[in-house]
Picture 1 (cartoon, rainbow, N blue to C red):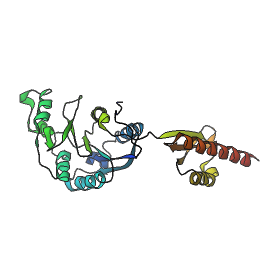
Picture 2: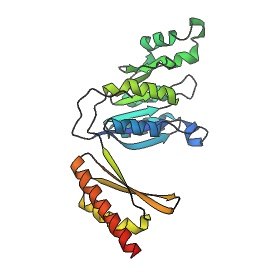
Picture 3: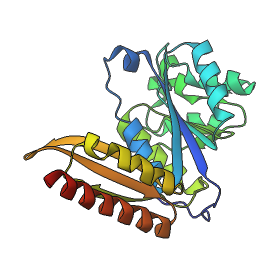
Picture 4: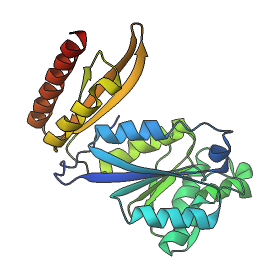
Length: 254
């Protein structure tokens, strides 16, 4: 994974993902990008705050994009920049920003590196249509580029291509202080610790505390995950959770 050379901001850096495609909504294609991008951004200190999935409809894409690009530091879109008639993401982004779109000579040159002139047909040339004023995002896998305009990064839906594009984008991103995380294995059911855990959460507002039940070989169990950007606050909250868990274990055994 590429890391940004931009100094980490103390102000939270936020992001949203806009997944575009009828095939995702129908279940025909299983999304593999959301989790990857979420983990990638977390490692850069960028908080993913929202994910939206929209169909291949111009109005839906434009409306969703305008809503989230105004709310977050960055938006990452996936899907809809291929050669077919329903690949309308580039047109929708141009519409959202109110700029023209046309074949970009830089994008055409990139496609020409892969396809001989007789194979650069009308369909493939659609992948060279870029909104005016956008910067290109390199695609070392299949050459057809993504692009960046404003705070919006437009990337492919194919996971291997999206991942390569994200590596290209990462060094340009403003990053925040990384979120730290510790997990406490409770050895108890979620209902056994729910009330006490809520009190700990109130007492440690600098931390996010979540409980995640699962079934182990010995029966029901719970992982308590504590997250914070402040290492000292994290340690205090983890210590409180550990003490609470020990107390509840003893109480239930007694």
